[in-house]
Structure formats: structure tokens, C-alpha cells
Length: 83
Image (tube, rainbow, N blue to C red; front, side, top):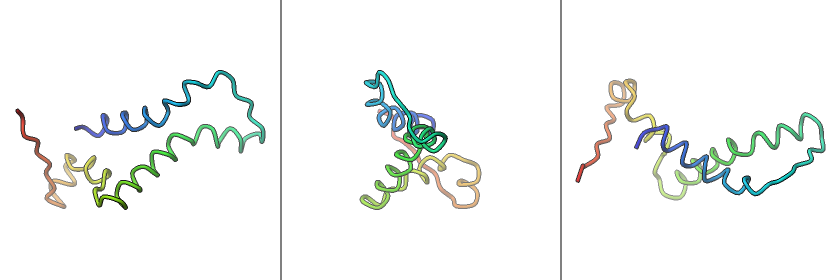
């Protein structure tokens, strides 16, 4: 699975409930806007951290596995079996 698909899938799932929002009133000026716009990236970071802590699987390492740096410096290769 590519890095783009992992991030897109997770971000989409996190943002899905926001589709139900019809109107939003932001109180708090710039700080209030920042809280709204930071919701998905912050939640995404927490998901990655939680998965690593609970399962030991590091999504960040998996996403980096096909980079030249990972393959040359860390000798990381992820292969998938095609059926």
C-alpha cells in the first residue's frame, strides 16, 4: 500500500464525521480557526502514535519503506505477495 493511500484513507475516515456539519461559528479569532483547521492533522498524528503504542506497528516506518533512504540506510523492504 502506498504512503498516499494510507494517509488519504486515514484522513478521510477522520474527516468523515465533519461532512455532517452544516454551519460552524468560530469563537476565539485566530486561535479558534487554528483549532478547526488542525483537527484532521492532529487526529491523524494521534492515530499513528496510538497504533504504534498498542500494536508495535509503526505506520510512519511502513510509509517510508519504499524510499531510497530506507532501502539504502536501513535496508528496509516491504514486499507483498500477489494472489
